[in-house]
Length: 39
Image (cartoon, rainbow, N blue to C red; front, side, top):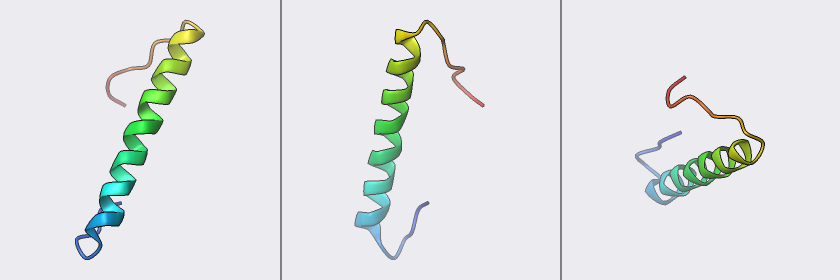
């Protein structure tokens, strides 16, 4: 996921992963399911 030769792309990927995590956590909370902190 991280590429030292393309830092902007790596930062964008990390931002996307954070957004997906927040979205999944919010969606699961809406239906009453709690996600584990670690897998």
